[in-house]
Length: 256
Image (cartoon, rainbow, N blue to C red):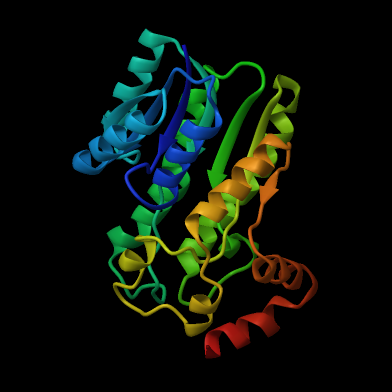
């Protein structure tokens, strides 16, 4: 049985990934979708199965929950599918100055964005054999620190670095790993992110469409690219982050 596994599938980029993968990869027998919201997962299952000839298998739970991951690992061992695609899309961020939100909120960002992503990848890797794909959702925030988004940016820098290392290590197994690094995307993400602070005005100017971001990411990972960056403005930001002193850019960002 050939499958894809997608975390964070109940909304935003994870949901969009599920829909586009179902449409693009016709050789899959099932897509396993992971998220906390049961109702949203089953709505997604109904929608995708109606439109495409693929079975959607929902797993209701949080990737930061060790008991859920242990259950998922045992299920994988029992079913022994061939995992052809893994998408780590679960994640969240809070716009805040470090120390402004609760200790749990700050460490939960690290647990979900970094630890859970690493654990799920570790669990799934032994079931990936030959010409498989991994897409890890990082962010343009991975390219440099970001005042008032500091912990989130740090977690995404981890995802980016981890993905680039993994990509080199898995080449010999013909598994391509792509770090997806979008800028701001119009999803539910910012509804949660703005609990403490509002999104800076300039981010609204470069807000991307999730369909285009996902389409580009799938095109890039199939082409063997290690990084996917959508949009001219975000590509320019990536170049500036490499060429300009961080202290200079950080001062500008802090004032905005």
